[in-house]
Image (cartoon, rainbow, N blue to C red):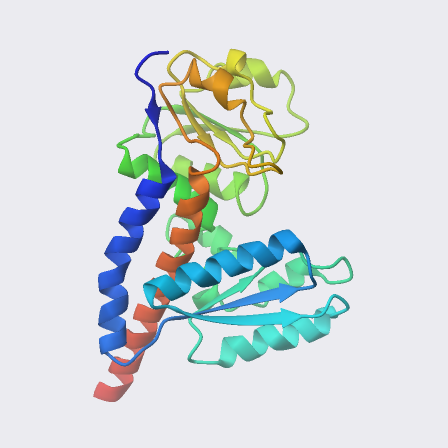
Length: 288
């Protein structure tokens, strides 16, 4: 298809961060330093890279990055103790527990322990429920990134048929809810879905969130569909066959440089918002 729109996530992320600079500067001038605490358990190289990238992004914006690195043999109880300590620490505004954690840890129990006011990565069931009902403070960062990209490029979901391929609790399910709240007709597909190519062919907008490289084929797409690829697989490969889908899509996110950079900017945005709420509470207490 001619005149495809490449949805450049780096451009969107830079726009988000430029707007955040002013807000962070205002917080710093008020004597409050926004702080994101990241917890890494074990020595998974990919997780270490992700945590480092998030920390660097924080520092560039003036957000303090507090990194907690726990050993591989950490127990659920030990991790819960760290989370509870961070919940009580007023200098910490956001908490991120890097996924995945070692197998002996009850990851869901640890996610649930994060204070809803500090759940800037949108991993708690309470946060998910509030997002689904339309009043969540901090949606999961990748779904929030997808919505932000759509807004930046003027892609309206209203009345459109959106097919989301994937139903993970921090991506497929919450992005389906966010799009439903924007008056899209949403079909959420998964590993038990029959006739997936035929369903994708009905979509005005396709969200690929399945975690399989080059999974969505170009021949599945309706001519002129919008493709939002939230996949990131080994070798910098997305969940869609980019070259093949490019021929059919009216707009598409590349991998890398699509949803990924915006996801990190959403984490910064949510941490800044949590810090702003902290400042408001502090000022209210002073005035009482």
